[in-house]
Length: 180
Image 1 (tube, rainbow, N blue to C red):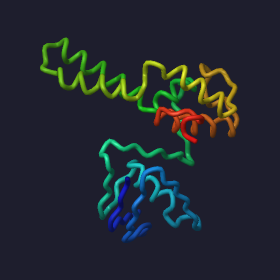
Image 2: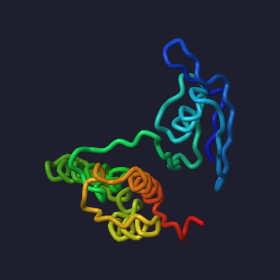
Image 3: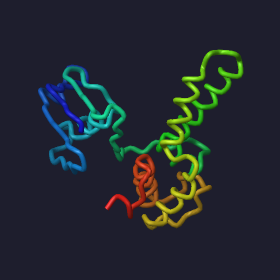
């Protein structure tokens, strides 16, 4: 459950959201309609935790709740493959880096056993052990039949949109079959 109470957001002197109260329950689907510049994307970015409100409260229950957000502007890192992009957007790349850092700290004599355990738990929870197989299955289910080792910059707009959708599905560890 995500709850917004009295949320407001401005860009410079221009208020975009004012006094927004919203509760989104489990398994809810949300649609927003409005003119350009009315704050739809800003509201969704706040709900997803990608942006903080200037005023008000945003709470998630449980606190570990993840909200998927398919950004209109998709960022690509130079030289990364589709598979690497999916791992980055699903949180696996960050979790692997944190596990490596915790392991180095532990090897260096620091008392980092709690940090290492938390990083390992996060990596396991994200399903890193079968991520590549899941990613390939999800892409195939979305009709994305491309070499996942290639760079996404060379994909068509529709293929890049399917990669972005696959990244959200992978962030939740789901295929299309299990999310219906």
